[in-house]
Length: 293
Image: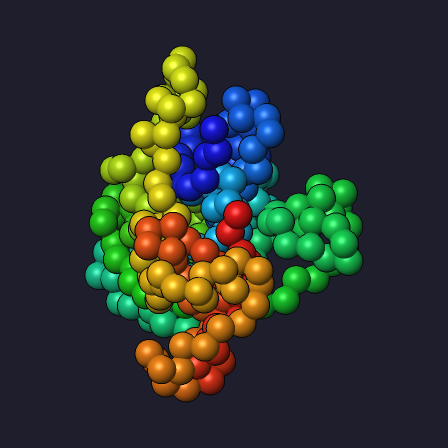
């Protein structure tokens, strides 16, 4: 039996994303598996996992916004910007709630952000967290990020609980650091929960024990989301003519009669409800990039 689709996994705290992926790989040894949006071991929440042909759509999931709840503890900053690191800076600055609300508004929109040194960014072929652990000297480049929404939920006992909706590439640990630096203070994250990633919501997620409970592969399918249901943010075209076979063979086809000379960077085609290929439209012609088996 062939399995293709997406799993909405609720990653538990204390486990890496790769560890969760390997657990599922053990059940489906010959199935190609991937995931979108790595979560640190300290973090928990939504981790979309692609199975089979769905691994070809991971790059399209990255186009969607992510939502987080994070708790920042004021007064100290760690080298990892979370609970796992060693304290490198301290002070006793704890802003008033009104002041914090004003500052948070300034973080909305496009901005430049310096990633944490303990991250998976590659520097000369090595992960930056590996270099940081070796006490190597290196510099990271600022990244352009976008924060769509941010708001304060709770602010007491030297802790702040904040909701943020941001694009891929945003580091919440760096965000907490920068918020604290706005007051010339220090803080680090003590809790981080991803509540949503595009069409994947935490209230609809599955814990790993549920996914691995005894049963047949047919039983497992009830947790698998169809590819086309996950890609609702990407334009699609349904076909039922000879162009289906042309696309399956990786050939370009014309949609000029239906769409005119349209250009679209990301689009996918369907044979009724089955996805055929991901590609782009250039002057009304569809060029397949990844064809589904």
